[in-house]
Amino acid sequence: MQVSAEAIWLATAAVDMRTGIDGLSLHVQQVLGRPPCDGTAYVFANRRRTRLKLVCWDGTGVWMCLRRLHRGQ
Image (cartoon, rainbow, N blue to C red; front, side):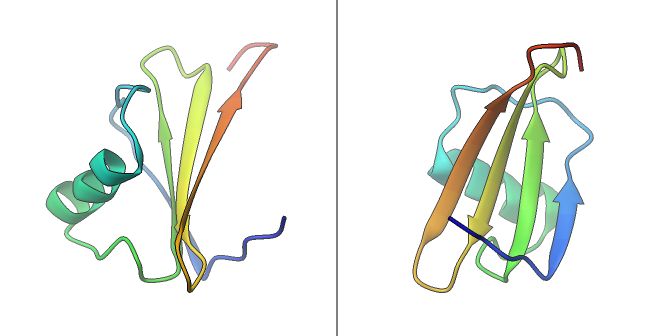
């Protein structure tokens, strides 16, 4: 799998990792004031910064990837 993004935005505020694609897309719209389907990748982290979620539009749908960091933050 290869997802390319025109830009990458990192959220500075922690998000609940139970939040799914729809909730994170709504967060992008309301907090950042940006359309979630603009070719940009949006990265979110939990409070401890041990998990990351990436939301990205690939032209046909939204990808959501989760990464658990095993060796720190």
